[in-house]
Image (tube, rainbow, N blue to C red; front, side):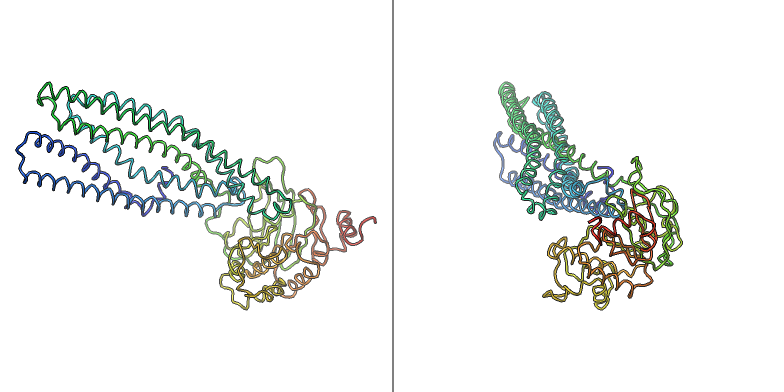
Length: 578
């Protein structure tokens, strides 16, 4: 929780006001039994005038209204402080996550990050509200009530010597035994969110393989495991009620029995009726506030696990550093790899890429071929610094990529990844991710180059057609073409297509490549493909195998020198040995 304190910011004021209101409420409530006891004694002695009753009644009413005001305002300011605190935490989390590299994100699952930003933040919000409100009020009420009980009750206050330690010990034991189950729940939530996320994202696959029952069972198991852990914890916490009732009844019996005997035997000189009445009230206040403290202990301990999980995200250090005075202009789209080796984790034993030496002139068209797992995507992801290489140097425009301002570099390198992602919104809104200031004419031109205008013009709303979340209302090929158009709107120095035309037919693929050659001749184009036809006319074709460059050259050169390339070409054009 202390690590998250910095997220309070401007909500310090309502937080402090809440504490002040709680102090006022506790002090005022503690006065009421004291005044009431004096009133009861005076009534018992007789001869009370109406002016006295009205005066005491007015005082009690004023104290009650003041206490009500403090309690109500404390609830209002506590809500403002806690919800604002939670809002700031979520904002800080999303800003922190946006600084992560792919390597940092790989440490957290998507489901876990969702749980941390929802369930965990809600737990911390609730704990903070309890800390600044109940955790202030309950100890003060406890202290005030005990002090006033000793002042008012004399020997009757001995009841607390027995009851308070028993209740306190019991509540602490209950909280301690319940904590392990509460802590386990959060990992179960990660599993539940993961099940929901996979089910929703993979709905077409689930239905295609008729695995609905399997997914239902998986979700039920994840949900049931949360139920079991919560039930186990709640069974223990439920002992609070019987323990509290026992202590309340013990205190009531003790005060009534001992108080009555002392009042009768001393004829009111040692203990009077008003003191007995006040002791009953203070006894209830003491025990109730002890129980509140136990619930705060349970909630804060449970939330401490949530705070720890949020703190893990806060504490994660982005492994991509920018220099003090970065370069903020990319001269051209030339690329150079020199002795580059890369692995996805420093702890990994095997490199995904090793000994990469490659020079690509600005404006060239480069094709990359290779079997699945040959690290084609890994190679191109190093260019915009989605990852950093452990060894070697990568230059863009003659400058080491690590010397660039990261935003500048990525604004000049447009990537269309294997997994095409569209966001909920209109086609125009999706395309303007590439350039927020793009005009309608620029959008249409980019769509023509990507051959996306062919299907957009047939849609009822054309460029204002709404795209569902994830692009679920367009086909795979249409999604790919929209993503290519979005990348083109960046007007990049380097355009990378990572197997981004796999869902379009060969005729459309050829039209897209022709548009690239005619309209963006100065842009360096890197095309990862499975079809030789997609890269056959490239200036340079790179053949990758097991994380290294097996061969490079033009189509003609590779047909003569690379057995792998020749086998791929022949298998696709002549059916291999058939």
